[in-house]
Image (cartoon, rainbow, N blue to C red; front, side, top):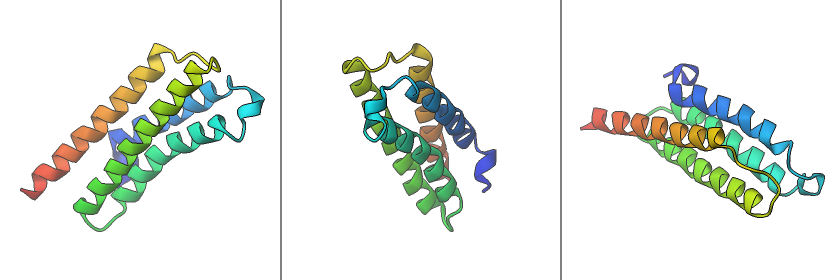
Length: 117
């Protein structure tokens, strides 16, 4: 399966771009802290989807999709922390993008698991 054809991967790439734009708002003192962590978590989502799609089995692919879900939770947490610390304001669009990406990945997991039954 080519990862570039997956809605989950396409949506996660869009999310990375949005997160990078948002991360510019963080103070320079956070360059090696939250800024770095936020960017890494966002990149990890699409990277795990791509790596899983390149694996030899659907079971492995599902495992990497779960890693991507973990990265979404990590990113969401880091954004909430950044907002709670007053570093940035999370707009509704980024929250919706996170939720939509999560839903697409969960749908792909359900699909892949149903093929194994």
